[in-house]
Image (cartoon, rainbow, N blue to C red; front, side, top):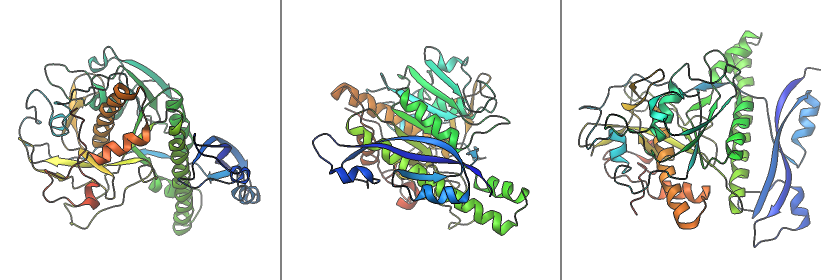
Length: 406
């Protein structure tokens, strides 16, 4: 029989949340959300034939089984820059102004952020004084041949150069850089799971992922391997579904640990496949991994220009996101030196990761620790719809994320 290599999310232990208890029989089943259980888990790979796969799916200690999928960069889109000089009012890019980061007393001090992307130009002046801990999951080595990861990292924690602040959390002094997309080699969901675990184990409070599952690429791969297009699509759809479910459970288990140990808030771009400029109802649902339960999915906003009090969802931004942030005409670091402007939900997501770092610093000052569940609630609870006169929650979720003021 044919055999394939699968990702297996396996429960290794179930413990009660401190102050609660579990019956012995409860430890032998996959806990439901809110069941008062802290789940320890591991992710393995195994080569299985169809019978082994079926049996494994019936195992109560196995939470998810999936064939790994290829990843794809959420490519920046061609979009008009905001009116004026990129919003450099008060010495800051427009996204820093509208999120309130410029006025916030917090800057991300003591917070560790992870960026899982195309790598980083570690020698760029934007990252002087920041400890960059890098790991390559592509086999191509460190560095950023694309420029996407450098721009994303700059938006989160780039240092002010030339009198213009363009990063949300310039107080961050340690960042984990996981390279999961290279020029030729791109990791799969297997390496993405490994990268998330590496970031969590490395002490990341926040993880940013401006990437997606490559469903069209997977359909093409199956078709190139001899399947008819409809069969290739069906096979890829099943694989896609299984990977979304795996990420649902993985994030759920991560959140369960927040009761007694540091977890990480995962922030991800919603995707750029919508085409509102073609037709208002030409909108696409949020793409995974952002679509997974527990991941903060981010939509992109544009501005009509200074004073940036009239924002709107970007035409390309996918729907059903949790929150929104500036994603059109975003000024940040450019790989190889200098600075550039990019647009996309990939540019909005690091704004949210940066604002989360400000809230995380606030938590550290008040309690000495960061709780990822509370962090997600603070982001969503303090998002606002003011300044979005025509926005619908379907497009922007709870609204524009805002930084803490006190």
